Image (cartoon, rainbow, N blue to C red):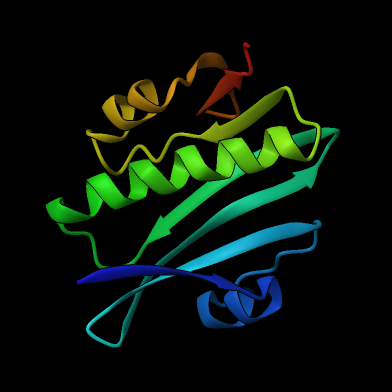
Length: 122
């Protein structure tokens, strides 16, 4: 069963072999003691960014990922953000639907990637 836990952004970067050089709040997904993905908020380029990376996707992860995205957006608002951006993972056709369910809409296409924006409304 998938569980999601807070994590140190540096540890996530090491686990994924990537560089996280912006201030960030990170989470990891664990399923049966296996690391299956990460996500979080990062601040850079005068914007707040939401990211998710799933290394072992399963259809049953959609709901927990959706709920976690909503929690992270609430966290962004608590931290004073009114807009959050994300880049759609074009590897997964369902990513468009998930983004819409969370409230993101296409903002721009930059360097061939779809950038979606979420706007806080009271």
